[in-house]
Length: 247
Image (cartoon, rainbow, N blue to C red; front, side):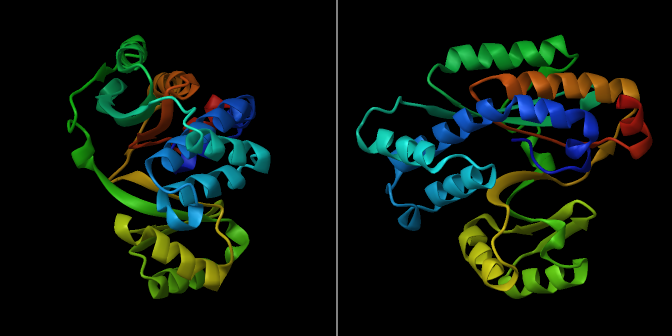
């Protein structure tokens, strides 16, 4: 569930993502349960739940699993989770934000700190790296939604602020409070998106060499494999020639 960046889709990670599919389902179910518990169990009346359900459907989570997660919150059987954000630096000062839902803050903090330490980084205080990111809404579309100009015009008409298009797809950004409205307008113009969510968008990115990329990816893999971690965001890019060496 890492944020968008070009390196996230390179070939060597595809098998890893397949392996994490069931873990992804578990994390999405947790988010659905928490969203439903904190608000209305009807997605149409609960923006956070609506986004969580949409994210689950985007990765083909079975409907009965989604419904069970919602019912769990309604029945009062859901665990009490705390939402925690960790901020730190990977090797060579790369900024990383980790978002977690946990029923044991001490366990999660200890685990996250150990991952950073093992991979040559260090965990910072709240706010230590968030200033390098913007909190925004992100709406994703497949490349066949239209060419870059078509998507850009639709995004601007819908009230979005920016669009990032490449040969893998389109990513449309808007203000946090406008995400639901912009998403609905885009759906009317371009069809259903692949995903709509709140993200930390880096204000700039740093290209890394092979050794740095290997260490950073080891750290992100460790974080994503942790059951308490919901999302990992960073501010680095892997150049194509380095990605080719990673295989």
